[in-house]
Length: 149
Image 1: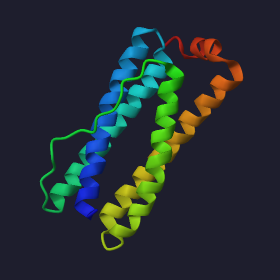
Image 2: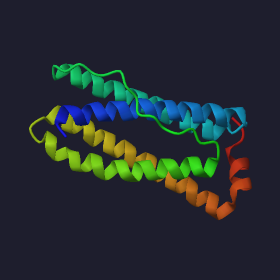
Image 3: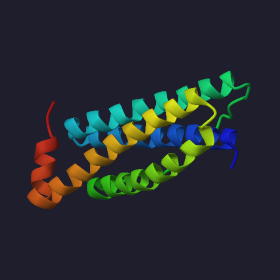
């Protein structure tokens, strides 16, 4: 995979994942799970911004970004939703870390990807923590925790 193909795949993935998270947040909000919905919507916004940042970098590199998004499933079960997110982050982190070597001669892109790795690690830790919380207190208590403002 070339540098440009890699960047285009990042944008495509984040645009798709952003839409998935936006839908998940709307579904959660409809169930009254406002705390969880707000966090998931914030994640959607962050991914949208990251995709736009990649497209901006592609333009700076003289490339034309594509209008594409990776398809992602809509998951209504909260635990399955979090498990899917956890799995996706766990797979993305080593892939992004491995890609850094491609950008040894491009400090700007490398710094951008390093920031993305930190953001993804933070998201992975958050999701993993919520899955542990569900296991500790049970789904009913977790849902109670996620209700409200």
